[in-house]
Every structure is written in structure tokens, then in C-alpha cells.
Length: 281
Ligand code: G3P
Ligand code: CA
Image (cartoon, rainbow, N blue to C red; front, side, top):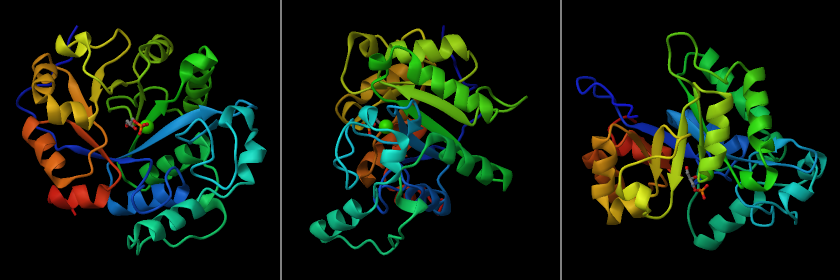
């Protein structure tokens, strides 16, 4: 089954802040997401993992070693353990190391740079929407196979508490779920059939060559490397009627290519730069 959009309704490319405005502020922190909202991003992206006490937190890596002053796997730590860590200072050190200027990154200890729960991020999105912003959230399930459905179950339960597990009457869903795991998307789709799902692809596969998506997926999510090296796959996906969301698009020439190919969303660490290139900032 295809999901074609009407050819007569061109829509602007959605700019999605990858882990927040993560080029300028520490990824997956309130600081990074607030910055992305200020910068005018259309949507936010986050990764979710389950803690040892089954709380969903926004952390990319399996371990907290790179992005905090702690050590260990997220799945082995409880939320209280994570809440005691600093998820901000590593970025400051990295910026110094890179000799990069980061004028907008002003580390403030406390909530802005502590571990971010999915719940807190949903509150932020709801606040922005209540204030009139059509902000969306793209949530990626990380290593969901290890948890045999518990990540998806917890995710849908949390979304349900915010009334975000389905689109509002007559409008698009503010939330979508992304994954490299077809099984994860299948589980989401089975439990929440109206929630949009994005199948992330890092490599060219026979499925991609055929312009097909797995059963639980509604949107294609190829990595920028695929798009750069094999733009024909994007064209094929679009011809098959699939929407295409590309990650992670940081360089102006990559943005330009995405525009040329007519993709639907650009997922970037640099929302302000991309919006400016698109003439929207
Ligand atoms: O938005 C998709 C992208 O985030 C997937 O890669 O490793 O950054 O989670 P990663
Ligand atoms: Ca991600």
C-alpha cells in the first residue's frame, strides 16, 4: 500500500532539531531543546531508552560515559542515579577542544543540563503547542529488541497520558515514532495504528532498492550518506508515494541536495543554519 500525497499541495521541508540544537548545546538536554524551539525548528528529535527502573530517558548511547560525568549503561542505572549526573559539561569541554565558538551555549547547572525524561520533553512540546507553535516530536526507540516490547509499551503509555498517542481530530499527529528496527515500528503500529512511523535506514538494502518499507512503517528515513551516494533511491521512494525524512543533514551542500530531491524533512544538529539556508530565519 502506498501513501501518496496530492501533487498539488507542495509543503515546505520540515526542519527537525536532532537531539535538540545539538551543535550548540549539549544533546538531549532541556537547554538544547529550548534552543531549538527558539531557533524556530518545526520539530524536535530524541532517542529514548529504558532505565533499570523502567523510566524512559532521552539518551543516545547505550552508556552515559560520553555525554555525562558518570559511567555505565542506561539500562543498569535508575532514574535517580541518572538525575545525579551532569549531562552538560562534556559539551563545553568538547567545544574548547574543537576551538569552536559557541556563543549561545551558556552552561547553567540544574534542570537545563540534567538527564531529560521523555515526560519532561513532552511537557515542553505541549507548552510550545499551547503557546501556538505547531511543534512536532520525532521519537526514536533505541535497541528495542533487548526489551522485547517494553520500550514501545512504556512509550505508548506515556504518550497516552499526554493524549499524544493519536492525531487530534482533523489534524496531523504531533508525534511520530522512528526506529532502525522494523519490529519496533510494527509493535507501535499494531498498538497505535494512527501514529506515524519512520523506518530509519543506514545502508542500502534490497528493500530500499525496491522502494519498499516494512509493514509497520509509513515514512522512509534514509541516512544522508545513502542520499548523497544514491539519490536514485530517494527518487524511487518518492515515486512510490512515500514521504522521506533524511538524517543527519548538517552541511549546506547536503541541504541543497535534499531540497533538490524534494524530501519532506531534514533532521539536523543545526536547525538555525538550515532554516536560514531555506530562507526561513
Ligand atoms: O533521526 C535519526 C537519527 O537520529 C538516527 O541516528 O544515531 O543519531 O540516533 P542516531
Ligand atoms: Ca536518533
